[in-house]
Image 1 (cartoon, one colour):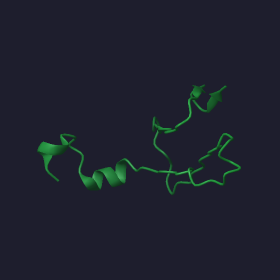
Image 2 (image 1 turned 180 degrees about the vertical axis):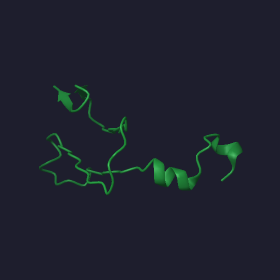
Image 3 (image 1 turned 90 degrees about the horizontal axis):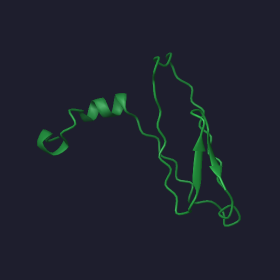
Length: 79
């Protein structure tokens, strides 16, 4: 990988081991479910204890105009 292009100082191996991505495509739902809110809940089990101050981010891509509200632990849709 060319450092002049990436400028991130993260190698592909570091990216794989330190910054994993999980992608969930919920667009292939039945037509009956497309008019409702899709509830996505992620539960994870780890082989080792998760380090303190570990942070997870979520990016929600939607074609609907919604407002999200978070209390720092849970994200809710405000209608």
